[in-house]
Length: 149
Ligand code: ZN
Image 1 (tube, rainbow, N blue to C red):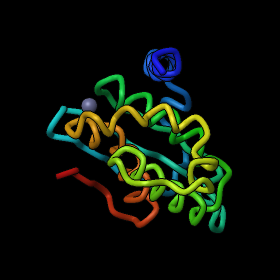
Image 2 (image 1 turned 135 degrees about the vertical axis):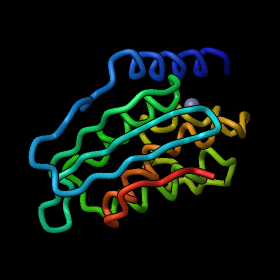
Image 3 (image 1 turned 45 degrees about the vertical axis):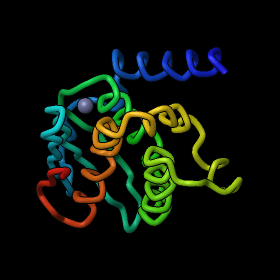
Image 4 (image 1 turned 30 degrees about the vertical axis):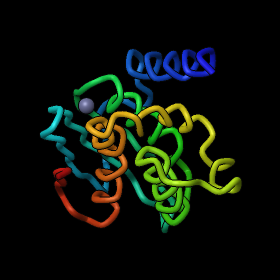
């Protein structure tokens, strides 16, 4: 389905050019820095937790289009969500980009994140797509930095 693929690529390009929630977050109570040495992508995630809910989240960094678009979409999806929900979503997303089999229920939860399904054909890009999510998890766990390996 080439049309669908083009549409997906458009969303990635759009988010990489105009990343959402980009910048510093004053008064952040959780932060982590992520680095993907394979590609040189860097992502810093800042967030404010309220109980178990990610109330505010912003990110900074630089990298390829996939890592930038992924960080942008990650912040959109995790804002105002309980961290357990975000952890569950990351597990599904990880399965998607590594070529795992998703149940219908899992696929339905992806929403826009489905644009990254093409990544599974490019194993070297998997770290680009997952870096922001690994960094978010590190921030939530209170780990200050994470390097994909
Ligand atoms: Zn990259």
